[in-house]
Image (cartoon, rainbow, N blue to C red; front, side, top):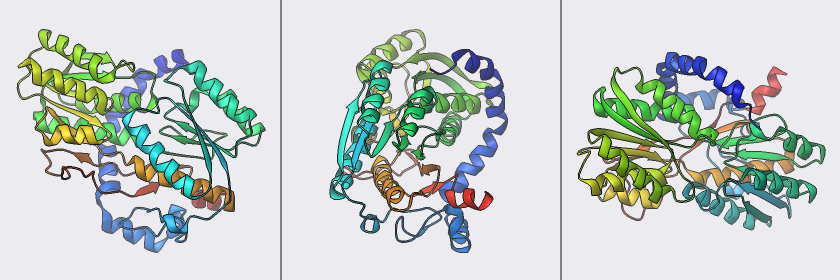
Length: 380
């Protein structure tokens, strides 16, 4: 598994580095998300640099790639295995629904193994699919850096692997995920500006999740640049009941720290729990909470005036379609758009005035390749 001692030795250096470049990341993140004209010009001038073809992923629109589902190549019946850390969690459930719906139209047979975050079940699920020689294997919100032996076994068996919500690593074909560092930077800036540089903050993290850890580390580095902001409590989310148990922990924290002004949560479920505790306690007046995923329940909470007033829209429906398109490309051409694909991720909030109407979610977003295979081939 991941080398914890090595991680600990690097932690101090990484925090310093993230703090140093946080401003640069913010500029880069804003450019990726907002500079549509510049991106469109780049795409028109050199489409190969995003590694796309119009007949599969659609032309770059507004500097972002789009999935043209009608043009996904038909590659025949395929057996797809998915091993996920939590199939019922809001974001993963939306990804699976999107992927399975489009995969069914392609004539693919999809089998999902929900491990509940159990390390043994994760390894066992991967081994089962590899031994069955599925046509393609997807890791759902699982850190691939902890699975080098299993990925090597998959490669030796000729089973291609893609990573959802994790990094590209050797022996995988591609990764399509959230930009965890960009998200942590944006959340840190958002809270810092709302607090005007001062206030007590609570964090709810999940150390076993690479993406949550990356966001939390970056977030702390950004808010750490404001001497008036202080993290007064940092708790781990209990996956057995992320809403209820986070609510109980937040209620306890408010007894010691009634002046808490903001809460950062690793995703919307614990964010909703923390917001419920704030609303029911009568303490922490004016405190607000930010999570991520922008699921329907979280959006309803935001619309209702809940202390939950920030969520990062991770477009899992688009991610599902990207996976079908890229896997089809792999079978059709033995290539993909990029090794690493990021989906655009805006913050949604009453404070920003961009909460969608009831019953709606934010409009579908595009994506971009930060490691395009076309550029990789050109460099090689």
